[in-house]
Image (cartoon, rainbow, N blue to C red; front, side, top):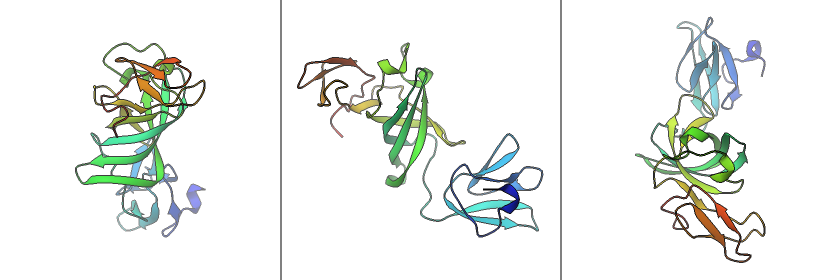
Length: 193
């Protein structure tokens, strides 16, 4: 969307640019990044020209992307140092929320586990279901971590034949069909959720 054309009543999605910090004060449903004011939720823009505040009123129930919330998602993209997780469920103090429109979380290699991880492919692969927690909720995509025994891969399929992988050790999984062995950062909850 063109920043000059954003007006009260427009529907926006997370990451849409609403204005600049010189014009408005970011309010509910927004955040500031390098001088730009961006939408933090799906909703309707509300500009208060008197107080110079801009906000986004959630279209639906607001998503509880709060630091410390536990999330479940599917690995959508895996690079050497980063993994993008399509978050489908958020567990917070308010309860569990299934997301009809997934939100992206980013996992950096430094936040995989307590021990050294050389390459993200040693921890996660595309299609893995992962349990993580949010460590930074100020930006979208939010930053997540799988440090801790309760966090990590909870379901994985063989990269050779697609069959379910069964836990073999602390960081190894074995294919039930072709007996292929693969490494992952495995949660204590593997195959139990």
